[in-house]
Length: 296
Image 1 (cartoon, helix red, strand yellow):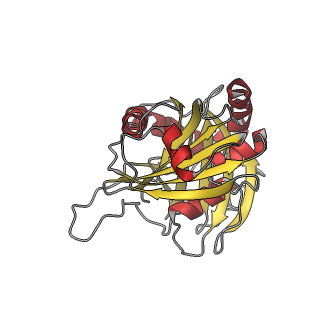
Image 2: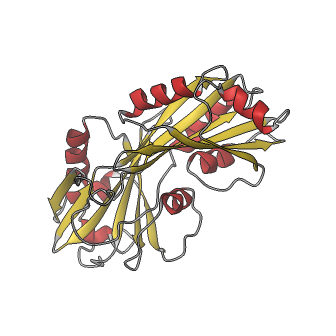
C-alpha cells in the first residue's frame, strides 16, 4: 500500500503548485514579534526584460544552494492589497477558493515562459506581448524535482519595473515509521528542511475508511480539504516521547484504511512549520510532506 502511495504522490507532485500572494509591492520582510530584531527574507531582484523569469529562477537556485527542479506552472493572482494566513496559503495550494484573492490565470511551465518577460505573464496568460502585465498582480512560479515529493514555490511582485522575489517556500518529502517518536520526527524534519523548530504546538489526527486517490493525496499534502478524511481529535502539545502510532491510539482511531496527521510547529520569527503525514498500512509507516511559511 505504501508503494502505491509513493507512486501516486510522484505523479501528483509534478503538478503541485501553490497559489499565494504577498501584500504589498515592495521588499518582503519576515513578520516578527513586537520588540524582536527584524529578519529580512533573502530576495532576488530582476529587471523586467526578455528572459527575466529564467534569470530569476537561476539566481534563486544560487541563493538557496538547492536545485529548484523543473518549472511546472506559473500562476498570476490579485490579492487587492490583502495579506494571507498560512491556512489560506495552503488552501490556495490545493486549489480551494480564498476570499479576497482573484485568480488571473494559470500557465503551464515551459521554456517559452522562461524566455519571455514578467509583464507578459502578469495578466495570467502567455501571449508574447510584454505590455499586458498588471503591476499590482503577483506571479507564482511552481517548481518540483522529478520523481520525488520535493517542490518549491517562488512569489514575485513588481516594483517600478523591477520584480522582487523572496526566498521560495519549499516542501520536503519525509518517510517515517509508526514507532518514531514525536521528538525524533521533529529532529528529522529539522535536518531535512534545514530549519530550527520550536516545540510541537499541536497535532490534528484524521481517519478515513477508504484509500486515498492520487488526486486526494495531492490535495491533502498541499493543505486542501479531503472529504473522505474526518478529523478525530486535536492533541495540543503532545508528549515528545509519544510515537506516531500512539497519536492514533490516544485519539481513538482503531481502524481505517487511511490514517493522517497534521503537525504544527512554531518557527522563530518566521511563522509556522507544517508537516502532513499519511499512512495506508495500518500506521506502520507514514509518508509526509513538510513545509515552512517564510512570513512574507
